[in-house]
Length: 408
Length: 106
Image 1: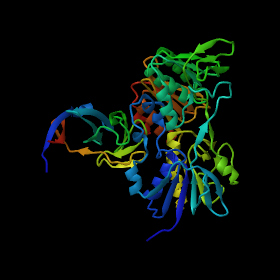
Image 2: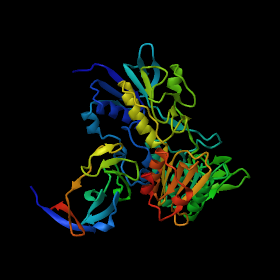
Image 3: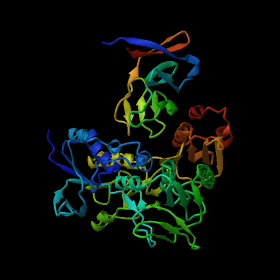
Image 4: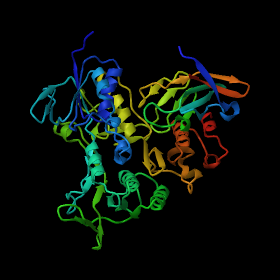
């Protein structure tokens, strides 16, 4: 049976890729058009600050789908294509060069863009942001062994970048405005661990510090600190957060509130439009509130739910948020969003960088952060999903077999 | 059809129930599992990215990759959830006495 419907996806991203993949996995035989403004096929972003920046992997290896697989799946991918408007009355999207593409169903997976540093000299060559493949390739091109790299922002991106640039032979200096690292995401004791860990790996971390301005003659040469001190540097990477790309949806009159507002099935306020990934504000049942997540897993799993919703197969999305980061030889993982807990249990050895810290509320795991211990974290996630009663003492006891706790 | 050669890889008491151990046969990285007292073997590297499954988490008859949560059926190698799309290779296993052998094509 043929299907003459056309489903359009704006944003050839990880979320957009999963929407397309899901449509085919679910047996949709109509047209799938994937519009991306970058020159690359949909790719996975995690390597951008790690293996791709190190030059250990090729651009192709980050592709979500290789070109032949896309062709086989009959996904019509239009790259270098910027969408400028969504005409909901005509059910068409309008591209930069005036083309109008009709849709029966539309998915918005436009992601987020970097927050710019509002200081003098931030536009000098040598000052970079890290969000896209283009950014990674540009930084890699600019990096020279022995260079001083100024990292603005001690969050996930800043710390990963500091680690990678150090591995590439740079002297990395991290300046963070807050009084601890990764403060919006992790707990104070994990921030302390991060500080010790990065300092121990020759990263110069300066907390409660900003950059007044960048200076240089035609290119970055130095950073000026608030007191007037200067630091010579030839490269700077700014990682101070992202802003969701809601403008298309907003101008089309969709409901917006720190992201495109969607329901648990990724549906927007227009029944023919879904949205997924970093750009959405969605309800999370397990947390009991609405959230906007910037994560790999969210882009993937909400993308899948959005693809299904386009086919009227509504499947509520509610995962425990999960993140990971690789910095030097440490793999950090986090489940839940630590905010409110009454007990802490650390299993393993913090000093040797192999542990997991659980945050408990009323005897149930509320969130957890692991360093080089993904396995115990996974079991913790299952315990959390099952709302199993556990005590801090048994979690901390190395004799406790974590999987045994699941059998309760 | 090529011939299968069995290689001793572990003792049965090295792999408790619902657990996994990483082993090498030559250059081939293999994960050996204990599912309810029965032993199985799959290729040791996740089909999504280069990550060792021996650091993963066994739940029932599933192995979950430690990095991105991809799950595979231990007995068949079937990829059951994203981001993995490609099935894992499986190997025949036999137990003689207390030794676990994995069969590799010659």
